[in-house]
Length: 287
Image (tube, rainbow, N blue to C red; front, side, top):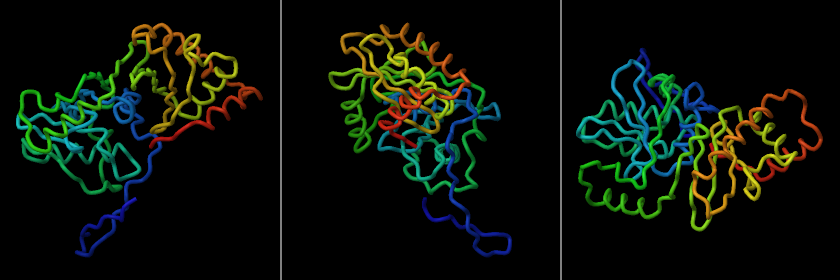
């Protein structure tokens, strides 16, 4: 956490403003909470449209912008906010809201290149955006959506070229709200953002793992899972010879098994507790 901000109070003296508090599930309350997490941690090049809570203008949520800009107010009036530009607080929602407010307040044609740290007084995205509207994520093969007919030069152009050279090919599956296939070198993986509290999701996954039902299919084993923004993201190692569409039925079948396991209220059995310990031993937490 950075140092507390300072502001003038009504008496003219300087008062401290506390840093933004830690929020375990910063995107909780959004209809598409899992997609916010995916845009923040999983998807390399994607955009989605969100609407301001007052029913007014739409803004574009992007994964990355040139030179890691937090936001951009284009000359045509379009507002873009980058989910993967990093953050300096314990609440990703406040970090992104801070970038959105800055973009709305700046002149068209201006990038937001840096921002002060969010504080407890910084609004959250849930205060600014319509939380009931689903995010319709559009994947892109590269980062050319940055320009859309506009010209980049200098460092921004070089940033675009470097980003396009390193992009991870990804495909969004239809069988679950936030299931993403990707190819990394010679291997392919499936990452699925589960929309339930990470502890409940871990218990459900442990129940499946204990009875050999955590694999997507024969030979499609569960590598493990990571925690991100209060949600669990299982990862499977796929057959690199198969396409993303080949796994739609497998994902649908897994979701049915997972939901049945999630609904179980009995305490974990000794075998399920061992399976849970095994999952936790190779689990990574990303906040």
